[in-house]
Length: 338
Ligand SMILES: Nc1ncnc2c1ncn2[C@@H]1O[C@H](COP(=O)(O)OP(=O)(O)OP(=O)(O)O)[C@@H](O)[C@H]1O
Ligand SMILES: [Mg+2]
Image 1: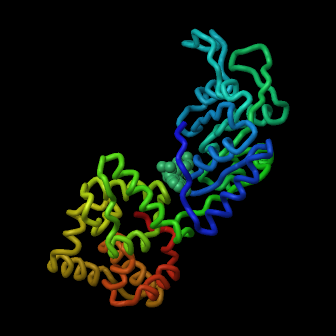
Image 2 (image 1 turned 30 degrees about the vertical axis):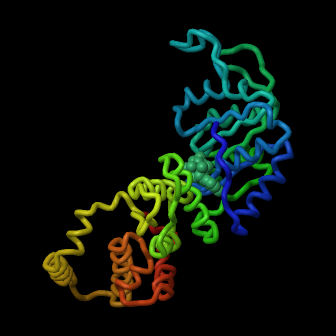
Image 3 (image 1 turned 135 degrees about the horizontal axis):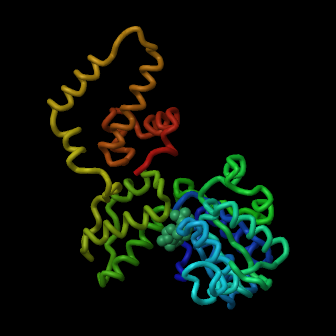
């Protein structure tokens, strides 16, 4: 397992780190919650390496990657002949993690049958291999993570309430990157320097003011992972040690062709407007119509500016703060996708 360093100095991030450091020492199951790409795996590593089990194995398993039956035998192992194709005895992750920690990622996706077995291990410290007859002892500290809301999963009957109670001696909430404004440029520089090293560039000349504003204004729905990809891509394309990176391509999925159709051809815009005018028929609810128009224009401006909010505000002839206010009003702040 890789050991990356955790970068950040915002209050939100530092208090999460403190919380994790405190919990590391207590030998109880911990649940890590946070949106995708917020660093749950890195926090799981911290919990392990600051615990008294630090020199024992840290074994991880992504529950979403396996089907129900495979997950069962991956976790608990199986004996030879327990099912067709099981020629040899297979050590499960619990057995391999013995004495250390087991990190179960995306636990929210684990099927109920597996959850029931997990419950038993936590409750009695014992389990059997699939198809096995004798009982094994588990001396494992469980660290679990999910980007779903576990209480919603319980309501939807996809997650056992009793398992959730037992797994969450305490819960660590990772802040999304949009609540860590102070860390965004710090992380961006960190990833840029690492990428330069990987590409054997001697220096990283930095980001232009414009590029910095782009990085700061964007909401990073994919959090630190998205930032990392975006910065690595920018450094790779730039491939220069002396010139600054002038601008950043935030959304690699935006097709330049669709964009140009929208923005570069005035007749295309006129035609679209005409079509829209024709589509409006009375009677209508004027207030609702205005709200929808405003929202659509915000989205269009964001699309055109590649989610650069200052540029999007300019497109609409309003200030950045007015623009942010409108995003909030239409609840677009958290739903903007890159
Ligand atoms: N504070 C941080 N400092 C440096 N790198 C970080 C930090 N947080 C996350 N990263 C990097 O961001 C990427 C995503 O982190 P990680 O895999 O831990 O997120 P995750 O929450 O487990 O995501 P997912 O829900 O998609 O599994 C990794 O490349 C990781 O190294
Ligand atoms: Mg993860």
